[in-house]
Figure (spheres, rainbow, N blue to C red):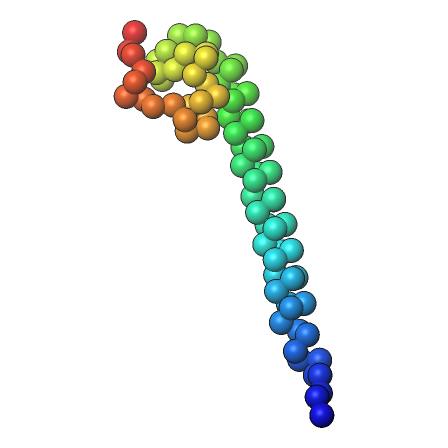
Length: 78
């Protein structure tokens, strides 16, 4: 005779809930990162060209610099 206990179904439900919570946490982290990057870009765009040049950036390098995609060794110092 086969018996099915409710304990056998719990791990699937638990892992499903854990997966949903992990997905929500990752989504929240991605959204927070997006907001922080947008704010950094906004702040840098408000600077004048001389100030940007002092920190080693030009206007076209703001977004790659904030994203971490800018290779500072390839940037020429003017």
